[in-house]
Length: 493
Image 1: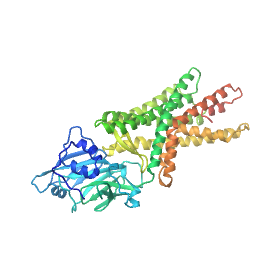
Image 2 (image 1 turned 135 degrees about the vertical axis):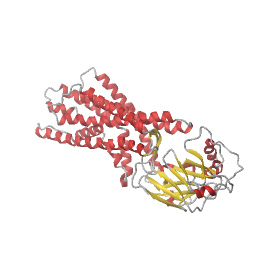
Image 3 (image 1 turned 180 degrees about the vertical axis):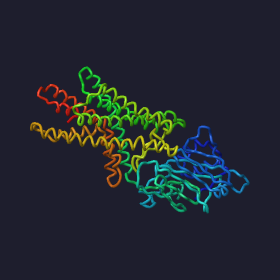
Image 4 (image 1 turned 135 degrees about the horizontal axis):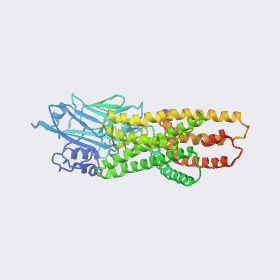
């Protein structure tokens, strides 16, 4: 592998090695030399693990990201430097791929690929470099993204000189199990999985800016929407208005906790070794706000059902109070239950095959239960809400054109109808469906649309809320307005 162990090097605190080696010409060589003899302190990074293992047995270690490393007995025996000790030190470190400087003269194919989740596993046993094993070591890389159909290859870091190196697949085989990449290699080194890029770094950076700017504006405009509603409470307002405003408040919480979670995960967690409790709380609140938003979008669809299907029997005693208990209560109970069987903390959320975001969010490090919590309460729940609300939107359009077809022939402008449909789609959360349509050849446009429409959803909801206020005011002052028209005006159509 080109590495030489320097047993005489002065031992360092393990937590300081990463920062120290970043200033060296070769990060990989420096880290390889220092990590074998470092002193494991009480406040070591959770990305670094070590333990003593018996050379007669297989060594096994899990990372906080769900990756699993298994070192055969043969490798442990070769790493003990010909002494008679029965135990050797097994070390596994999770590193960011940006520390490894890619050689510009490497093949175009390799430069067009990226490291899965930007994570590199450094694996060592004892103090001696080990290679040409007859029994391969096994590394299981958990795919922490929601993307399907991606292909990857297991590689290790091969140095060319003191300045750079490249990822090589020599001595490694790859097996993909659906959720994990399983690598089998005949030596110990720095390992990763290379996958194809679908979005370049410039677009990835633009998407993050759009998300942060959109969320910031959504927080401001949803707060203004709530203040307008408080001002309007002096006047008689429709039940639909109360539902719209509670959706806006849910969005305000969602974007606020998204910004706080992203900021905390990407700044404070890099500076302190124990941000776990705060990050857990932020992850729980972000999950709660997301479920609140989904629930109120579903209640928007339910309210449409009452207005359009049960037109003559929609009176429900304390209607707003009851649906408010559902809108805020169901997410609260769900998150409490999830905190008992799942986990929250620092996680790298994959937004596309090349763009990722560090967030305090639901972690899947505890295995099947964590994945079940994430996919059931987020993906499945969102899918059900979108199916129901899509049906309600189609029913709304059918009723709208039916009323206009049988009523007096009034002049209608297409752009007004389009704005009404867009506003209603925003309230029903239909743009969230782009989360399921952002793959394949249209992945880049799909991700941009998703980021814009959902990032600025609070702004769009505010504009639609203003339009409803103006329209409701005009309808109230119009003596000749018919009852069906009043009902439809509450929907913005």
